Image 1 (cartoon, rainbow, N blue to C red):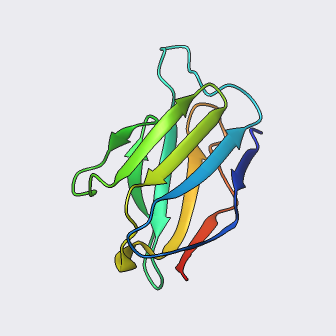
Image 2 (image 1 turned 90 degrees about the horizontal axis):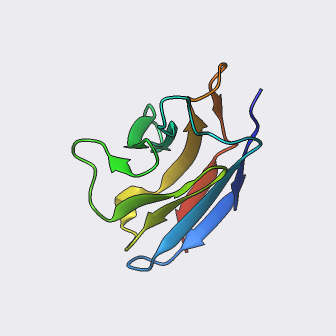
Length: 112
């Protein structure tokens, strides 16, 4: 199985400041169709996970533009340009290129 490794696992941030989460896969996530199926999910406290980003850098409907995704191959990043209180929660990267699909361990974003 593809191992997804996130860092950091805990991320204390100041409101209004940027935040960045790294995700590394144990093998390339480029599929045979040329796409890279790397997604980012947010799980707010007491809520179900929701997808923020699909195929590395595409925001889902309703996701604020302060969230952005980048990367290629095996190295990916989720950035929040200005953290807001509602961004507190756990963020997961997930690969859908290789079966079984696998998730990172999660990064807990909290306000300092």
